[in-house]
Length: 130
Image: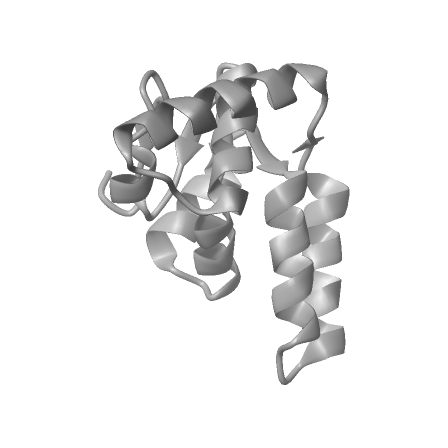
């Protein structure tokens, strides 16, 4: 089962061929509420607000969404403390996305392997490289 990072969804919406093909073929994909929020933000600041909001709504209606709950919050705290000890923090939204993936034992599909590779035990994949 796969949790797709925001940058993968953006690639899909832009029509990046390997991402479009894999997302359409993969039955067990999920989005996080964090990524969904980032997509809504991007749509609202775009030149084509209404059209892009409709595209985000399609994702929201068709793709199961994992949000932040007590389990995720605990994993977030562990990841953040570990990264702070290493002096290797990542962005706050990426921390939450990683916590959701780890808490639910999902493979995180991202175009930003370098940032997420700092997190011990987080399984990663890049569908553009596959």
